[in-house]
Length: 96
Image (cartoon, rainbow, N blue to C red; front, side, top):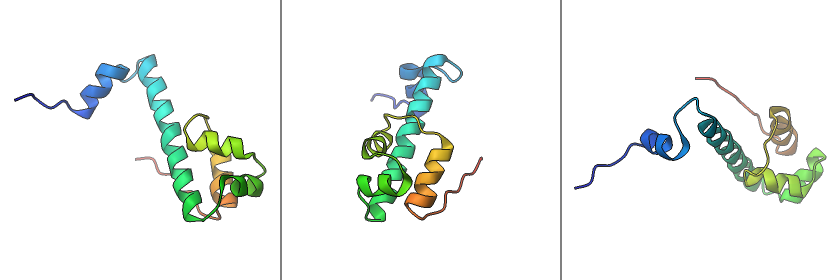
């Protein structure tokens, strides 16, 4: 029977150990993807199109699309604006 690999070992093997440049890039890309998915879910829950959200926040539909697919690195201030003003929701951040 084959032994299962932990997720941390998988990350180390395919993306490098914590503290390496390749792992830092993976972690940053992963965060952009997760934020994009959170935005997409909240936008759909609010029953808004990407175009409507863009119009509410003074951005472009293409930019919203790039954020939602994790293809654009987003500043916290922009994410705040999209959530607070575009979706009329509260953005809460915690450090744990």
